[in-house]
Length: 442
Image (tube, rainbow, N blue to C red; front, side, top):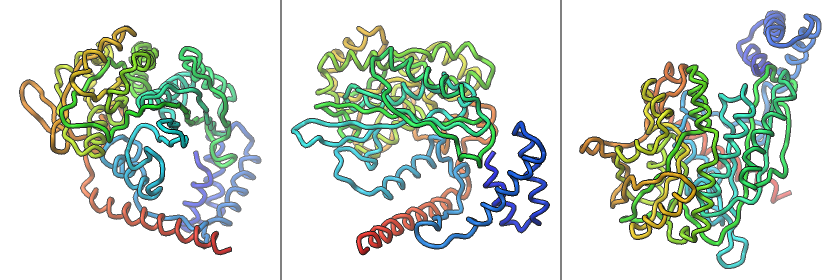
């Protein structure tokens, strides 16, 4: 619970200060193991700080406001709103001198070392927000996700870093459990965790036990497999997938806990190692992991980045989903094409497809051709002989009871919200320019 935010909302609503103090004291006592006297003092101090920072002036201190909340716009929900926001993030960052930056919507960023054909690959992944109470599982899956994002750029990761934030009332052992999950992946893959940061969420101002964090990874390569290299005539291959954080979350919150075990593997990493050892990555045009909004989301991003149309064969994709995971998803009426399967998607010329599949199968990982790249834009899927639209929904497939309640449909005022987001991103860009000028002119 964000007690600073609670106090500021009350002050903005002109609540009498004593009433706000009483309510905040009560909220604190619901969460913290403390005395009423200490809770009241904490409430009073919070209100003092909130009043001091309620109204701020100046470019650096005054926030940019869109009037659209993260939840309303679907940010983080791996659908249309989330993708739109990431396009705007790229605009705020602006074009860089990097070989691959945020404008490419790729899994990782890439810079040149200055030497011919030598690249550094960098990525960061946030842990799944619903795995806060399962810190080992959260660490395992976020570490695996970060490594995947380096591998799919055609590089082998060389090191990882972590960032862990636990709220004020969280047990310190959450940190150790989380690190144990990360280093399980690190030791199995021989890619060490070498540095990181550990903090409380919001310091004294966020109470409760919530945990969040991220894992970053760095790699090096002389070949790149970024999405923009996708070409008309390529074939699309996919490896088997059993999911990671998303599938674990589904299993946990629907009481199908045994399915979590299906996600505990490093098959993706082993498949990529075999691919790198084979030397075939120089013939591969693009690779990605099936995560952001499932294959639907990946298809949209690849199509937009490379300016091509992707056509998929549903029957071939279905065969590659872990049977227990697929059974769970279908029993819950969750579209498996719209959730993260943690499979490896490869786009390459047809003449090297057999060699790629042979190399990956040596890691005891199944793989098949699931589609092709054509001229045009967008994506289609062949289901029982009928080509259907394959664009992502407003949010990824609803995979928990709460997500099903919220739904996947586009809000009626989505276009209006996009205009507000556009305005806010432009304001942020202008603020950046003004502050840069101030610094230069000092």
